Length: 358
Image 1 (cartoon, rainbow, N blue to C red):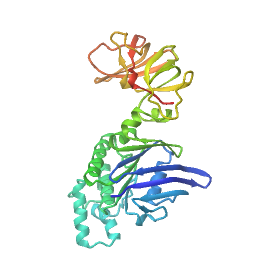
Image 2 (image 1 turned 90 degrees about the vertical axis):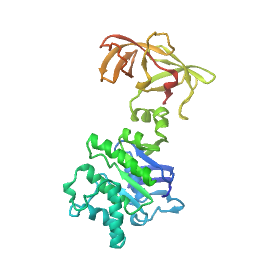
Image 3 (image 1 turned 60 degrees about the vertical axis):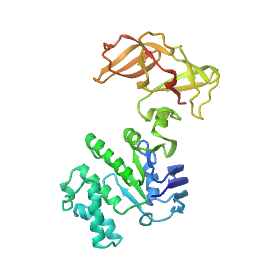
């Protein structure tokens, strides 16, 4: 296995910016995800690591070895493409064996490694089947086996689950993570799906418009987003505008649009946020942290009118109008009567759950 380092990597296509100043270090054996909307530069970055694109500026290293201009076939990476790129005229066995045959391994060793890999991805007995005789999930596992059988230092996956239905996506997500942990291989995964990134990754790099917005663990990115884009892109959140009303020690008071002052907020802000009296700020409040108040006396309790009530069985979701803002909340169903549209509701926002996102 190998670490991967990108040092101030840029990629331009003529005058168009593809990726700008990506500077990251991925540890050996880490599951690292590039996350962002379409066109943000995540696949371009992956393709530079694979060697399909060369950077316009910057360096790429695998461990201590510089590979910036090394062609793909000399990088010892395994790649799983979005459309799997399987050979329809070959059997499952032949598809998986292709990379080994290119490397001119003996027939005996090829047979052993392919059979071992088919067992690992749970495709035993499928060797003689044609690709068109497989389900989408089985085809995805063939593509994964073909990438792994060459024993790469690094596994690269470009949105490998996007063509699967929801149930298969969840099952295959588990299989990929199981294989990564079992093999201990450095894995770089590209997706626009936040749930995939959050559930599978050791760390995530969030991208927008070719630029890195934040790098961190799923917990850090979810609870401590560095800006409005990250806060809104990763899961659901409430973004409230406010003004710093005062600062006392490590605690901040913020006046929101309803005129109410939220008190006791911790200075848990990104470096881009200026916390000073009179400064405009954006607060990120996750719906699951907001709870219906039973007394109305807790600090940071707001009163509003229910705009939308959604009972899902396990949870009760509300959208509540509070002044000029709307507050989404999600709470576990405890058997209380569900509020209806137009009802007044008191909601408590714990101070430790409020983060400065901008």
